Amino acid sequence: MRLRRLDSIIEAVGNTPLVRLRSLEREVPGKKIYLKLEYMNPGGSVKDRPALRMMLDAIADGRLTKDKILIDATSGNTGVAYSLFGAALGYKVQLVMPKNVTQSRKDITQAYGTEIIYSDPMYGSDGAIRLVREIVEREPDRYFYPDQYSNPSNPLAHYLGTGREILEQVGDEITHFVTGLGTSGTAMGTIRRLKEHSRPIHCAAAEPAEALHGLEGLKHMASSIVPNIYDPHLPDEIVPVTTDDGWEMSDRLAEDEGLHVGHSTGANVWAALQMAKRDDARCVVTIAADRGDRYFAPMRWEKRYEW
Image (cartoon, rainbow, N blue to C red):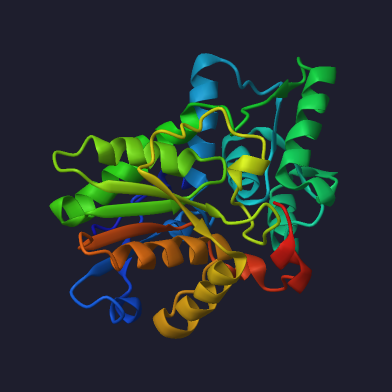
């Protein structure tokens, strides 16, 4: 890759590398498994892409102006991205997040000057969504509410970026793709782009197997507020992943691949490995949503929690 000189930190978003998971491939001889390292975005997660796209699109059409505060509900990573780009572009940011999100995410967002409003942890991400809607309804002229769960710029960022990059990186090699469902933007946008490829690609979405789970950032759709951007007919299948499978795969990736990733990434890779075991799979790609350093001190009870 050519060395780049940037005019702004926002230009560092995207063009993330794929890494081959050689250790896991020993379980599926002759198959390839690739992980797209989205934590190499400047904000440290896959959420940099949609956060920046939602902000730039809103600035372009006048919905986001300097006299408004950007406010949204987040379990952490999108909030970090909003905070980073808000600081870089000169916009005020407030975030509504469950009080029990990891301390590192609270610290990072506040370092950029963001104000955090905490929602009841017992209601997870859905509780944060309800609270931010109440706040905006009380003072609509004060806020720009991008609403990452309903904003078409969320999946568009992945259609234009993540999906395109995957095809540039593995081209006709890829036979299968899988990623987790949170806002669903990563899955929806990436799958739409991959489905336009000249050769069929089997595209799946992974979700927690239970309503009460510890895969932070992922949604069990049947028991959650379903994002408006989610199209249940777009993925070829839904792959359920248990919390234990996601957490254990995260540990394995650190020990065997040198990749310290979060639990949603563990869930993605576990699902990718299951797909690689199929007879028709030759090359499987999935997403590393964020790094594991945002989960240094998870409490064991969080393994049975509704995010």
